[in-house]
Structures are given as structure tokens and as C-alpha cells.
Image (cartoon, rainbow, N blue to C red; front, top):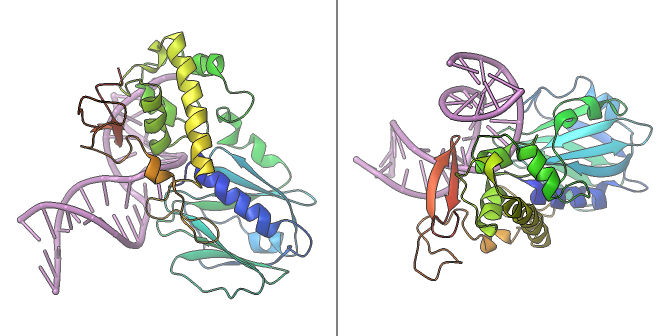
Length: 279
DNA sequence: AGTGTCGCCTGAATGC
DNA sequence: TGCATTCAGGCGACAC
């Protein structure tokens, strides 16, 4: 489910609920042995009594760093969501709540994931940095080390369609199906073009559109299609601003000529685009 | 090495 | 109404 903007919103929610005095983990409860991967052995013991020092994000991953070292690597998969019950607010168990953090202040943080494609792992020290996928992950699109020349260099020689290349987290981190479709539409580039064959001006435009769409989506609280929720249960709004995603058959916002948004399949995933303006 | 296909899971929407 | 099929925001194992 969640792509970079949604994960960023969740990260901020965790930061405001789990950081600070009195917010140490009183107990971690795991309601099953695994999600996509088995939970790290003895993770409950490793977390008990520990306090967080920072909540960072890398691509679609949340890195919850602990005081005195160590980090939780948290991924929401396709259907994961995190619900925060503040101190004094009663936790109400939901189907598919797999991991529960009970905080010293009485609050509860529940990790819910119906499809169980998400995961939660504990790494000692800074060892997660050398582990995959972080070791070979592409640049943060909203960071200082992402720009047109960097994008061009990473796409150089790639024969795969630009749509598929942008979904590759080794090229750019954090993009998923929604925001790739939206960014390509913004740059008026066909998803079918060979990734390594874009003109310099197109790469420039694309890098800018990637940053722009992600920034706007974060400002709108992310996109809520089915499972995604804010940590207070609220919905994102950016789904109302999609130009092409999930709009097959509708008219393209850039087309005065009554052209229609089409859906095609690339690498097994739906791509939405306007053949008239994306060339 | 780079690229495409498939499977992992549940649940919602659609088709018959 | 009920059952089968299809599809979904991600990722990685595998085959070529």
C-alpha cells in the first residue's frame, strides 16, 4: 500500500506518540510469530523498557531508532497501518492487529496488516545500514542528493520502460505505482519509453515532477485507497487529486480534446496514462 | 547484470 | 443469494 508520502505521514504520527519522556516501551506483544518474515527472535525482550531516540524514514521504510543503540525496521507492505491510542484512550482490538506496543504512559501503538506483507525487524546498533535493501537503495527523492543529473545517471543504459525503472527502489527510493503514474503524467512522458532514452530536458522535468507530486501528496496527508489510514484513524486526501491513477476511461485533465485515460499492464502492474499527452 | 513472471496473503468488487 | 474470479498501494525468489 503505502508509498513514500503515506509512510512519511505515519512516521510523523509515531514521532509524536512514541518520542519523549514517559514513552518508553513497557511491553511489546506479538500476536503471531511472523508477518512477511518471522519477527526477530527475542524482539519482545530486546524492546522491553527501551526508549526511542528518533523516527526516520528511508524510502518506504520507517527506522525507529532506540536510545543506547539498535533500531526497528518497520515496513507496512501493501495493507499495513498503524493506529495510535493515546494515554487515557482505551485500546480497542481490531482484526489483524499483529504487534502491540504498550507505552509507559499508558498509550498503545497497534500494527495492523490484513495481508501480512509488512514486517517488523530488530537490528542491533547501526547494522541495518549495511543490510539489504538499505545498502543498495537509491537516493531519497526529496533529499539533497536527488536531482536531474543523478536520475539521468541511474537511468543510463536501462532498456526497461521508464515506468518499471521508477518502481525499482535501487534507482529512486520510495516511489510506488500511484506516484510513478502521476509523475510520468506530470512530465508528459509515456510510461512505455525506454528508461535510458529520455532527453536531458525530460529527465529534468521528471525529477521535478517526482519531487512535486510527493510534496503535494504529503501535504494532503497521503492517498487513502482502501487500507491506508493516519495513525489517528483519519484518511488522506490526495486520492482526490489523482490525474491518471485509477481513472481509466475518464478524461485526462490536460487534454481539451476529450481523450481518455488508458490502463495497460507493465511488469504485471497496472499503468494509467494519457496516450495523447504522454509521448 | 538486467529483466519479466510468479507467489506471498486477505478482502473488496465484479461476474455469472 | 451464493460462489468463483479478479484485482489491489510491495517485495523478492526465480528463470531466462
